[in-house]
Length: 502
Image 1: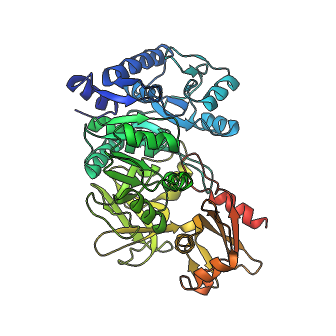
Image 2: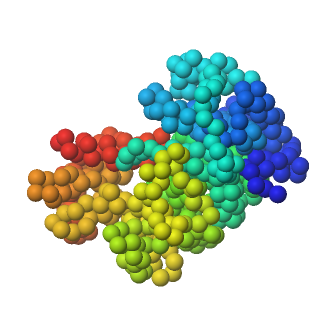
Image 3: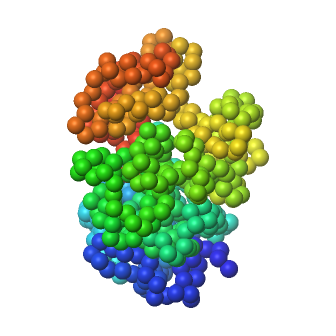
């Protein structure tokens, strides 16, 4: 019976131990048996370090087989893996170590220069698992108590794009359930190969890529980070059948193709495209679909739900940016953010959700947990959206990012979608800037397509037929590249600070 995430590997050890699972940049391939061997080394070391059920094992990492082995070894020991992107700043990593109350910290030193630098800074020593280093064991780390001790598999810190990150507790049951949902939504099986660059320190890389592929027996072309030339080579020569990533991936890929003068990538095995972990712009969706000749699927999910809550249907080509339909055992309700009353189809409100994948709470943060949980087991997401009569969900932005202009609600995503239809714009981000009278001005930051120049007057004229006057930006600022975090999400908090300083 599959009740813990390492059971996904155990299944394939019995069924097909010699089947390849991970393909690496140097040409090496690892079978399920090879991954199990790495996992056993990691498990033995964790036990030798007296890591207990409910202890947190932090992994400062970029994607590599050893990281996957540590995740599975933690499951076997009963500890909680806690991934942190190695490209985070020293202060950020130190904060996460403290918040997680980690018993030991690992670093994927051979796979990542950034991880190696953190390892050196924190006086790590070589691990029994080749290519890794680990910190001294903290004997004073507090063991988590039952029932959470036995339920939780992983701790993931939210990206903190608008505030302080929080530790999301993800259970074994939620992650396994999401792996099944993903397999079914994409008809994922052992014949598939995925380009696995999305960090396994994030729910997208952990659940959507690693665990769902492990459940289905699909193969991973694993990379520590995104490289457009490497992706194009993998699409052409390594049989990539499914490509998944945040909208930033596809935006960067389109820019790269345009700069290289490539009309359409060579991707003979590609059958499925998916984007998540951020809002989808219609212009980007249309350009990606034209480039590959495939539908770009989309979904809505978050760390607090261990993955997707809504996903578009396989075989259905929607002409809009809907996040699709509810997955098994998930519920979404659109409510008035003030009263909490459910709203009818077509009306915009806050998205509340509940179901099998919902977190049991934020790690040792009762105040933050109470701040988002509602009566009836609902989680108040802070996202804004509307439900259509056919059950399709449309996410329109964040409640905190909504701009109040002249008494009207302005949703940044709507303004961004209009801006992005201009041929010179690659992507954009819209924020509000407070005025003295309590009103808000709209400021748009834009990233231009290769070779384009910003003509503010022409862009403003372009928006006249697409946006009401109160929705049009008061200021448009061109940036070489919009700031993003390590998971590809645009850092609107940074842009708000920049707008306020203008």
